[in-house]
Length: 188
Ligand code: HEC
Image (cartoon, rainbow, N blue to C red; front, side, top):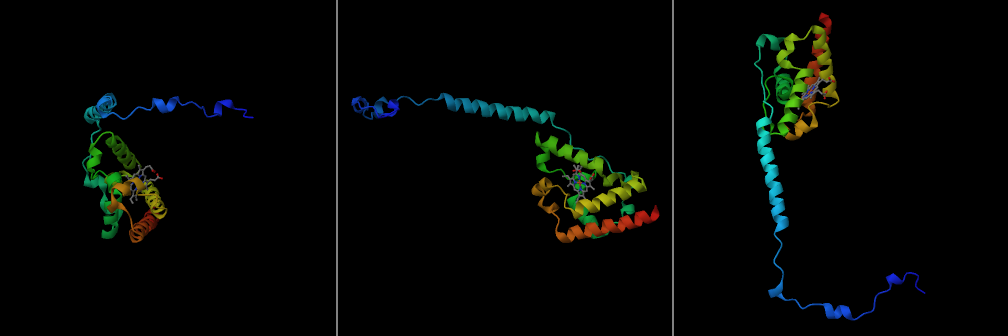
């Protein structure tokens, strides 16, 4: 006995008679509505993006005062300077090489915010404004972030392959930082 009669296949021969022959002439006209809806949505998104461009942040590279930058005080050998320039200065100085996508809102907000924050934590263009104690602390932090590969941020190296550091480049920066630290601590 079947406990679920509703599962029994219904035995009627109506269905076969209901099958209509394929008739191309009487096919209904294709619906146009859904496609038009998508075009309106896409148009709206594009218009919003265009308007957004007028409200994007300004990309600023404040002037570098050589005295304030005090690069000499960093005692950078050429190779270490090169690594800092290519991998760090875009976010930690006033000499940011803004990529093309940094000009496009809403990406620009993210990039500018990142650079602002980077400059706030460590700014090579204002190195001379740090006290010797702050300089020691920053150099110590640089050696740490290099050693543990926390910098440059991985999202940055994804969009800037040249900023990806080889083991050798990490060594160059790391040993520069350790030497600097020893020198600065000797002065304290
Ligand atoms: C894409 C931008 C970007 C690049 C490139 C970058 N940094 Fe940073 N860096 C930041 C930001 C943002 C912060 C602050 C937030 C944080 O600590 O993650 C920071 C923080 C730091 C700090 C402070 C860490 C702390 O704990 O406060 C040091 C030191 C540092 N970076 C060193 C470097 C060095 C060295 C390089 C190059 C090898 C580098 N950064 C490249 C964005 C960047």
